[in-house]
View 1 (cartoon, rainbow, N blue to C red):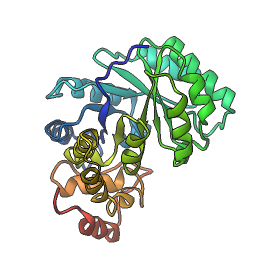
View 2: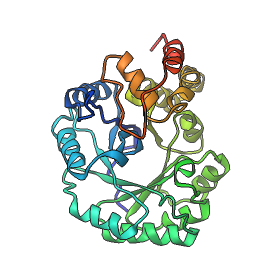
View 3: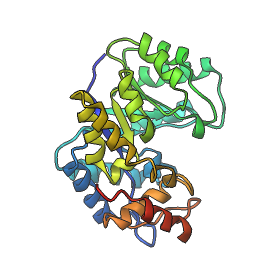
Length: 294
């Protein structure tokens, strides 16, 4: 199994900034790329859920990937999201996308269909067999409607072209079962900002983060302090995000996050339907919860 990452670390699930007319705001995207690079992010995740991939056209996705590749100040590794609930279509998209410069594919668990565990295993095996790039599983029961259990993940962990899992299930027992029995070169990444530190404690290798769009250095501080043995300081950094984190999801992701980024002067707050810009009430809550020391 070839791992394209050095130690994995902090991945930023990049938003797609929009102008008021909902065209892509490339100036905002460049601001964001500079910001997360200066904040010592370790890799970029393009076209994840936070990037509003569901409401972007294929041509727009290609434009965004090309722009990120050309405006990547520290030449960070790029993970590109290609997933869906039609295995054949996902394979076609993988094969028809120019993935030059991309390190791995992040592929979400098939949603809506609610396949069995065997169906999930067969789906990911097919993707991994057909893809030239390594696959990272994305388990997110809150969005897909099903959970990839630890037994299924461990079966998939032995496929030579499946290198890890972004685990966004709230079941820590499950993550521990995977960590205890996985192959050494298969990595577990936290799929939720608030489980970054618990995942590190069981052998996880960082996080694919929503809030790292705004506070990349903060997540780097959590990781570096944990790795240096300063658990108390790592906890302090993690606790500073507890109040603002829920508001990122109260009225949909990335609606809350885009408002936060607009407050930081990085991009505009606009999202595409069916998402909506957040209410004035939530705006005030986010302003009040913004960490003052970051």
